[in-house]
Every structure is written in C-alpha cells, then in structure tokens.
Length: 63
Length: 264
Image 1 (tube, rainbow over the protein chains, first blue to last red):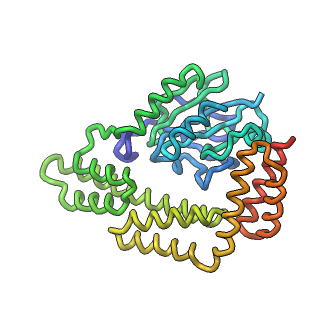
Image 2: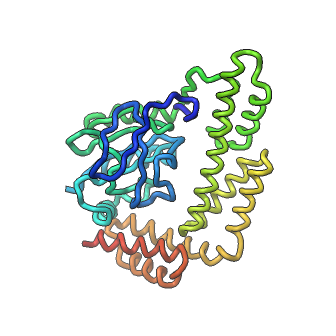
Image 3: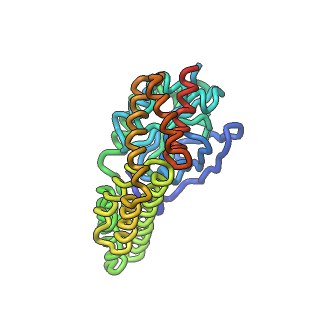
C-alpha cells in the first residue's frame, strides 16, 4: 500500500462533479469528488477525506 | 445484502465502502431502502450522487481506489468479486514502499501504527540529517512524509471537531483520548489533543453525552429491526424533541426522517 501522496508521481487528476456530467475514470486516475448528500459520512465527504485507506465505490440499484 | 456491505463488515475501518444508488431512486428512498433491508449500521456510506462513472453499463459495478485515491481496479462487482477481495487484502496487508528511502519508510511505519508524534519526530530527524547518500532524494521524501504526518494529525482533529459538532460526542471523546496517546511526544499536538478532551469532558457536553448514549442505542435497535421497530422510532422522535436545538436533536431528526422512508 502506498502511503505517501507526495512521494508518488500522480497521474492527471480528474475533476468530476454531478451525476449528469460524471466522467469515466480509468485505472491509474485519481478522481476528485465531493458528496453534498450522503448518509453516515461521519464528516468525510470529499476525496481528500478518505486518503489513507482503500475505498470501494459500489454502484448499485434499488430496482 | 450487497457484497460491498459485507466487505465493509469484514474489513471494518481498514477500508471505506461507498454505495452509490445509480437508478435515480433518490437519496431518501435509497437510504430508506437500505434501512428496510437491514444493510445500515456497519460503517458504509450511502449516497445517490455519482462521484464519477466506471463506464460500465451494468449494475452493480465498482471502482476500487488505493490509499492515495488512485483507481486500481474497476468493472462488474459480481464478476470481479474475487479480484476485489484479493486486491483489498493486498492493500491492507504489508505496505509496498517501492523505492522509498529506508529512513523515510520508518516514518510511514510509525504512522501506520497510529503513532503520529513518533512519526513526526523521525521525519524531523531525517530532515536534519538526511545522510550523504542520495541526499536530495532522501530530503525530499522526508519533507513529503512530514507533510503527510501533519496532514494526518490535522485530519484527526477535524474529524473529532466534526463528531463533536454533529451529535457524536462519545465517539469524539474516545477519538480525542486516543489522539492524546498517539501524540505524546509532540508538545504542540499534545496540547491541541488535550484541549479537545477537556472540551468534550466539560459541562457543555454533559447532557449531550447522555443523549448520545440513548440515541446510539435506539439507532442500533432501528438498524437491527430493519424497518425499525415503531417503539424505537417513537423514542427517537421523543429524543429529537428533548434535544431540540442541539446537534443530538438534529441527528435524531435525521434518523427519524430516514426511518419514515423505510416504512413506505
């Protein structure tokens, strides 16, 4: 696990926003994002808040 | 239960799972759906806002990011479940420091144990005496590590303040006490952490601590009973009124609001 952001050569950082204009990310990208409305965030609501541990973003449906 | 929720349960706070409802159901209904199904209460975050797209047409799909926020895997959640588990196990296992100077690796090893001040001290020592071999590389890596350590401390302080301001004073106090232990070797950091403990143990939070204890019990009961047993929800609404105007009141209001969508 890489622990240092600054130590890495970062790939292009993607600025992505709302669902309508959500950009496709690829392996190697470092997406930037923020949630305006999310449950159980405990104060962590943007990409930078989650650094230090792996993040699994799972897209699911209720139907 | 979605496999991702099980992974959150299995790996605990070593990973963060974010579940994104992607069929336009909306925030309240999708969280209510998850509550009704008994999927809440395990640390996973729920939203209906897509942070980005994986480019996959089918659901469920996923993107797995490493500790630096880089996408390391993406695709179909079901078809690639085994690969997801393997990759997470690899990432939360032994860290890969690549070609990082050994003296700087020690900083991250301490930080990984939660020993913030100890990591800070080591980084400062390396900066003061980077050695005669690859000096500029070692110095740059050590300076970067010092910024990461400071960032970890700042982030923990922010997190404790958020918990205190948003109706979780018990968690905030536990985290502040842990922080005091982990920054004992740094006077400035220790003073900040002690001030947080002092604030949370003060009179201002006494009543909130009591409410937090009650609300957390009711919250867990609501999760365990899936649709939320009516008595728990009624008591949450009573607590919302009792704690009105406080962060606990706002937290109770949010829970009661979600519970209504679970019952529909």
